[in-house]
Length: 439
Image 1 (tube, rainbow, N blue to C red):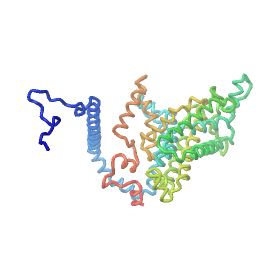
Image 2 (image 1 turned 180 degrees about the vertical axis):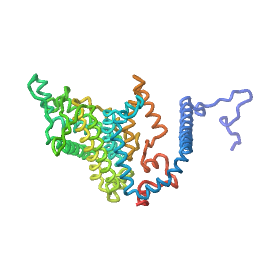
Image 3 (image 1 turned 90 degrees about the vertical axis):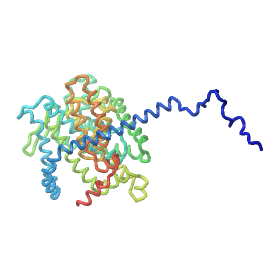
């Protein structure tokens, strides 16, 4: 055999240009992609460093306060069976008295805006919706983009049962002699009726979608919300159609030595009514979260297959989550219809579902107080930025983007959610372990 390596292996002659095949050089797209990846990783590192630096700075500022309050905090935790309810009652009383802050004190204009009774009523309404959606999204891990449908069902149930629909249709037909509806004592049963209608709708929505997850479930629920809105827009003889329903009577209590009448949209009693419903649902959802149902929801959210193999009734637990979230939306929708004298299909657009979901995500999924604070942020931030006029929603959106970048787990996340997003540390217990150890 010859030792000649052949023409392909021979070295190029001296003075000849060395050629390179195109495959050995990365394309411009590849270089741009690598550069983008490098810049993205650098930005993520900068974000983490900035977040840690800011957190350590704030901790340093609050260290003297923390040391001074530690004995009192430990004393409260040791007696939490009665101290926590007392503190919760004090917080509720303080929240109920917020509309009177400007009456007794001179407060700046921005504080007057966010303590107005109508604004606080909207905060309470969205808190109620966020608590219901948090059961579906935060506890059970089921993405729902059609939650506004339950709001609409509750509102139309109240408007129909009070006789406001009949009055609106008669006026639209030219009958000017029909009398507007009047509130009767039996109409307090409208709230259980709205709850029942919403629960039935939640079961109807949940039953055929039990095998769907993630994006597929989100598309189905989005379609359900649009179906309800289109039905309200086209069933003229039943819902009033595009002209809507007006003159819904305001609630009243006459009897037992009481003579209470809810007035206009600005009436502070609507805020108190919604606040009472929020307190009731916080207690109910807290009890569910600490029960076997709550643990089953956590198991389904973490790994549905593993939960089913351990005997968790997947179908029943999913339907329970949908039903509880739906009934919250139905009751809130009934109160909304009584507070606002006019409802029509555009009121229940998709953007409302997105805002309610934003309350849950920004506040912290799986966290009860996070849902409330998220609702407060969504409602109050545009009011705080009202001085920016046409740019206030731009500033509002930018503020939400900043929160999601530097606080992706939410304002007040659950400990489990924090561990999922930021990684569990060795000295950090999960929520269930901490509760079990302190019981």
